[in-house]
Image (tube, rainbow, N blue to C red; front, side, top):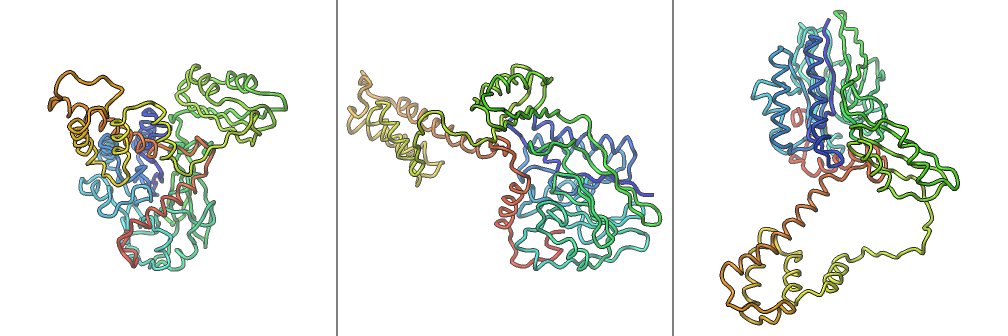
Amino acid sequence: MTRVIHTGDTHIGYQQYNSPERRRDFLEAFRNVAEDAVSDGVDAVVHAGDLFHDRRPSLVDLQGTVDILRTLADADIPFLAVVGNHESKRDAQWLDLFADLGLARRLGADPVVIGDVAFYGLDFVPRSRRDDLEYEFTSMPDEADCATLVSHGLFEPFAHADWETETVLRESTVDFDAVLLGDNHAPDTAEVLDTWVTYCGSTERASASERENRGYNLVDVEDDGTVAIRRRGLTATREFVFVDVELAAGEGIDRVQERVRQHDLADAVVIVTVEGDGRPIPPAAIEELAIDRGALVARVNDRRELPDEDEAVSVSFANPDDAVRKRVRELGLSDAALEIDETVRNDDLADANVRESVERRVRELLEEDRSAFDPAPAPDREPSEEDVTTVADHIADGAESAVDSVELSDATIDEDVSGDIETDAETTADTEAADDSSDSETASLGDFA
């Protein structure tokens, strides 16, 4: 018998809720899988993609991953994997680096035989390229009694599917006995054309919609080729506390706070979901209560469509730059400061040139007309080189900080803030991104394997 752990969607490097602790949680969940593999003495760990949350993992995340893979290598447990949509890059993949280090095998058209099982791989393929994909695999070796395909994508007959499993099985040059999948974070198993097709689910909750316990699959292949799949949960993952409140007419924040107090929130991620007909509630007050009671993170999802208690305030986002300029003028800044502000926010100015442009303009203003700096008192001495550079540095640093904050916000937008957005929404966006990053006009299995 051959026994392997089928895992995937570990999403290492995901700083969920902008929490460093949550980032560590994703790495530790993968470590728990590896430790289970060593304890059980399995024949291999098979990863079905999205090892990392994005294609640019930090050095700390890479170091942690290498340490875990070395744990497996030291126990003579092979790590076999395919590339998911989150981590896919234009050139060489992170799996190629780990393979060069002797810590992983990237699955593809040629089989990797473990025990009596031949494992093949199919990396994530964008929808726009699947019609041209040829499912050509090297023939199964004589020493193998079972052929297994590992892939990443949303396959039928599971939720949010956009990939025809029957097409893959019918057109493949190898008759597969099992298909081990990643991408769908919900574990599930079905039989398609007499072939077991299974998702292992994710090892950490990447969304508040993922309420079930996290885990992985244990896959046993008997000597006669019979495949048995069973689920094993991970017990050491971060606790999520889900507080669901149905407000009756007239009920409000007091009722929500009462429900929150009924739970032990220590070190937990707390998700409060409010429905019903009650009064509007301030989410910040509920989240603050949860944090005060020991929660690591707290989020409130109010799913009700409530009328405004006060007169509606009209807000237009048609031209945010005009709104910013208006507010800046209201601050009573000097003419020089206003002009420099325009320079900093110039859309046509590259970020790298902000400091140089601001410094040059400060020099010009000081030479042309010092009154531009009113109402600030005029300096009692000629501006020195240090003065000019210091002024420019302060302004440019502010601009760079603003840019950094925008990038941080964009990188850490969490689907849970605005409600439970399903995993397929994120997958759709990543699929489009993968489409854009494709280099080749034609597709064959060799392009992805």
